[in-house]
Image (cartoon, rainbow, N blue to C red; front, side, top):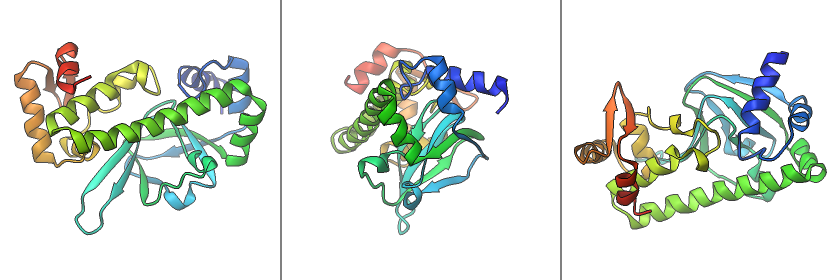
Length: 234
């Protein structure tokens, strides 16, 4: 990794929830132990059986985590991570994500290391241990919220809640969190709320009629955040 790349990586990770509170010198030392990975868009990066081997931290691009029903072809996206997001370390807590595929939504640059290295950081760097615990807790909370949304809310409400969560930079894994889902296809958005494309298209049209959002050049923009929060029942 060149000095420019290192500085850029330090900046991205310093803004992430996972490395919150760490000094630049500590981040530089930790990053120096990691391997640079580059994955093209549409690549299945890692399957659930491999999660016990290595962890990955994103520097550029997005990765989605989904479960698929091979019989019906339906899919449920569990999470979308952007720069500063990480995966592969849940196995350290004995969490097994059976049947989950990990696919890139863009060309991705990531850093990876062994789970033994992650454990060593957690033992020797208290601030990292605390930040990593908060990060993992946040990801678990997201899964709980997704389950509750599907069980308790109609499609428009679920869609509004999902847009709010992924458009609030303070609640995401990077300062550019508003870019994580706003350009995704209606099919991809449907996978994120347990619905189908045609229903999501109708729901987006309803939000547009209400003046809450606009869609131009295949990118969704929020026009009235307060009204969106009200529809989302937050």
